[in-house]
Image: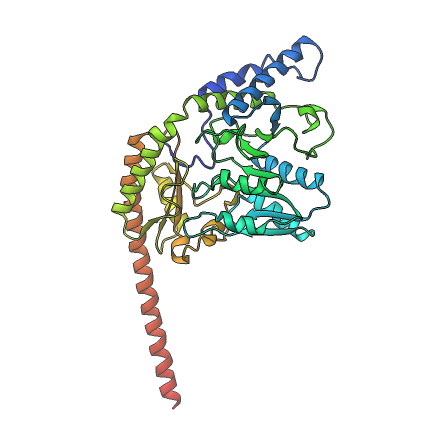
Length: 408
């Protein structure tokens, strides 16, 4: 087995070799500024345009000019939401969901404290949205609807087309955080109802520190970062050339291998789930079993601590997580699982496994063997702990009663 079995691909992914190779010249000899007039710089500008076309192809966009390069998914989400709100200063209502990534969740909470009214759409026990609740939430004061394409913790896919049609019928801008779906499921923004869409390169085997925001032609949008003419005045700042080139190549490779997500990754994910459900008592899968991105499995182990499971998995070289990497270190239970109504004794034991096209059946078998051993060990410790607590309580009760009798 490899030293590291990486099943944490919703946090980040390994850099595709093709992307690394494409980036290297722009980290060394091709260092010109793409805004320069001279040929040394303009050749770099042409490569950025090529990357824009590669990203547009992955997204199914009508025109590469609709792609704006950013630094990450969080910037893209902030730019989309703030850009639309600034373009509609007379409207003060936002509609989003209770299970968004912190990049959207925290921003909407921030805006709520500053006078915006936010409607937080609920999800059911499978993590699914009710489009009728969304329809009822829209008003003439609604400036924007922002809904993620797929949840980063459970992988549950929302009915974006159905939601978009409802939003479009009211002529309201529609933003989608698609960070977890780019490169995993087919996208066709040319014919879909989405106005703005966020992606991040390192989620589909591109480099970290670079992302993209799709802005449909005709959408009125105010730039989030000003001070430069780059990206047609929609995002100021000298471009991260190597990152953009790497992300473009990663997009091209992801589009080429898109069929493997359902053909290879999903069967491996399902094999892992079946093995864990069969071998581990007190185990459940969180989220809709079918309407999920192919690589993601959120599994809970009743009465156990997810972080304890991760520590023991790490000793075997297995990488997983308890949820979003952007909330690592938080002592709060998952806001996603709480919104789904998952009971507390299941929430604390949640572990997210997220595979990639580089994952293998051998790795799945290895993880399937080690997780039950870890669960068995922790369940034994938990039973000993409960026994100790009961014995201590009995001793305490006896001592209290004895002292009470002496006083009488």
